[in-house]
Length: 87
Image (cartoon, rainbow, N blue to C red; front, side, top):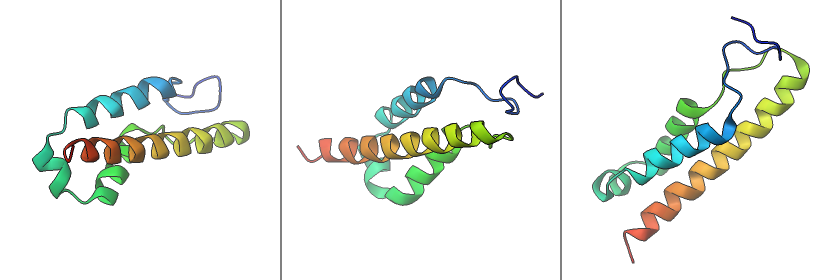
């Protein structure tokens, strides 16, 4: 199903995806977070919550910006959550 902005089946709410990713991170326990490879965990979460690849030119730029925001936010939240276990 193609949407009006040239994307295939994509929700247009990056903040909702970011919030869902943050909620998932907040729900992770110390044992899991401290024993899981941080890079692999962040990559998994980014793949899980990112949009599908857009098919039109302008949408590709938006996709890249949203991807970077999602990636950076997830990394920050994982690091912050792990640090909380050492306080």
